[in-house]
Length: 279
Image 1 (cartoon, rainbow, N blue to C red):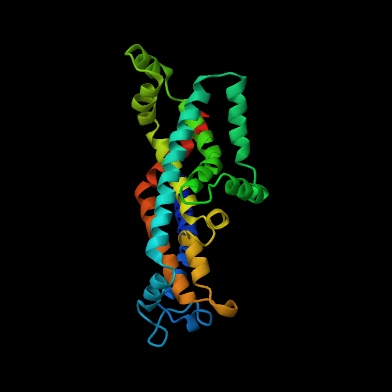
Image 2: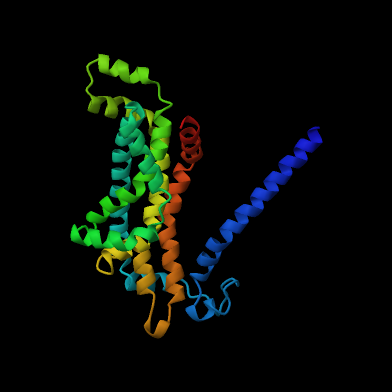
């Protein structure tokens, strides 16, 4: 029996190791090719840099100057941070209301938010772009509210499921102690939601940071974010692409999100499972 368990464990470990390698290979290829001359990337994409193909940090230097990386990086940071904060605050508040006030209105609100998750972005992007332009939200401040609209569905779904498992007695105790609803939310409810808050923050940060289509449609080429800047600035005349600079900028764009994910990954499974089970 123990031998069967050991064999099963080894098989699982082996499978997960192979799966990890499969997922890491594309990242390794991008990192490896970021140090090659662009003339050799398309002909020798799977070879390690050698004396002939190695160009040092030249691709990184060229990429930083070509796409104006610092400005694009700053815009991406601003949009990502404030969009995630707005999603967390607004979604957690409405989820608390939905979970505690049970009637037909809140049930309808919940199903509307849940339904919004299955609507493809491509189905509404042209109408959305037209409305955003009418409301003058086509700037780095307005796009934050657009992300709130698209990110609220999943966030409300996860927050509502988690809040249903929070004992109502602690909120009643806060009310007896003289807390108004806003104080109860900020002092009692929000600290309890920490695991799911971190989970929602991670999922939305990875989505917003890597998003290309929405910033391109709303901001265009005036206020480029990191993905838009890399895609547009690395393209030359007649369809030519600076693959060396492209790979180098991809490496720099990946670093912040990898650091954020690794430092917070322990909350992902905990929050998702808690929200799913309690919902």
